Length: 106
Image 1 (tube, rainbow, N blue to C red):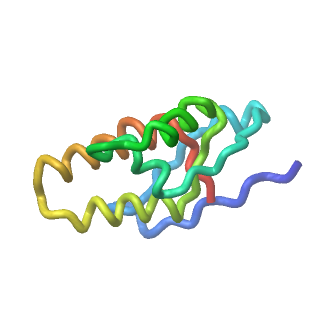
Image 2: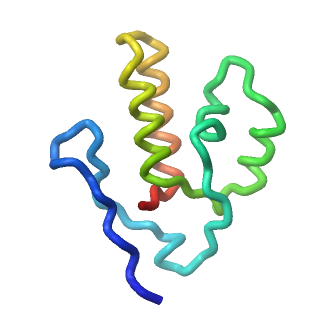
């Protein structure tokens, strides 16, 4: 199997920059079966999240991934918000939950 194409990133230091990271699921040839979309990844932080979506996320834990386009959509949405507790909470969720748990594929 060939190597994965590198992620195309803006210049270093940009708020959109995706630092290099390893993807154990890919390196171990484990199957990533579910590519998560923006609406799915934003569901857990809604004031009234859909229980069915949360159940599906939990059901596929360890099989989830997302793509760079979705990551940038999420970041763009957070960056458009005025500085507030809500924005900080979303930014924390994106960094500490989404980035920490999901591979971001090109």
